[in-house]
Image (cartoon, rainbow, N blue to C red; front, side, top):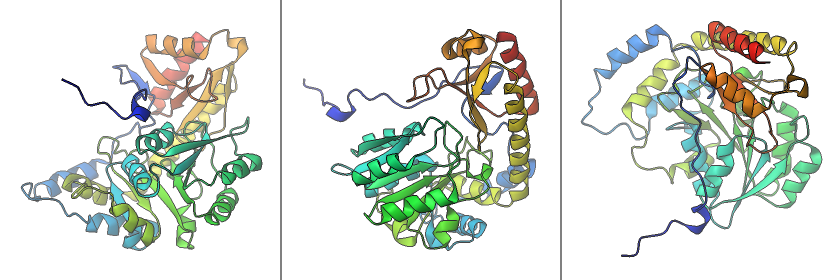
Length: 357
């Protein structure tokens, strides 16, 4: 019997994942360290009792799209929700990428931009960031010459924490719109930034901005994300979605979360304060760090520490502290990324880190 073979271009591809280890302090996947508001959970429990679970969900997710649109002050036809922002990224590539087409990324950045591009048969064009992880004009022009069909910008960038300025994003849009490239702004950590590219969508920019409920909304366990884009882009993406792709639970949970905006902002403020505190502590330790506009900090031990990034990751894990080992990512040899946790979690992390160093 001859078994079917996987596509040649996928035969050596490894799945994307981060370690799930049973530890006391888990600071490796940029989740919110705090649960959603108690009121949200109580409201959700009540609303779920009203659902006819034997019926398919609203295939248009009408109420959720209205609520997201109200939150961002856009038309509901400019919103499309899905099972996490990764499904949105995949759907954008199914609609605008594919075999014979190209997608561009600026490394180092979120690995799934390249990974999903490969899964969809899209050729990946890589532009290299500067030493400070900014994106230089020469790099932009080099990518532009290759005429990608899709271009990804992650801001704040994962894993570096770099926030692209409004002026830079405008310049990217101006250059690449002339050759018909779809610019996708990944704002998974956008609530930590002082501006959003959705402002540009409202002004008429032909771009797609992806968002998630996983980070600042404390809903990583639900897998809910969305895109805000001009209506014609949203309609194009709808053509590649499976029917009834977004279940009733997610639709209700997302709408209810948007009733607790002030709670979300309070969590963001706390995490920003904690990020500043950790960064200040890093200044007194033998580590190199990069300024972050997200809920994490990228760092690595300096030669004075006399320990490699890999060994530091192992030493922390032995103390039941899990951070992200980024050493194998492009341009990030020896680097680790720590998610900002609760004050108590951060205290434990810093105590263990200082003891090791």
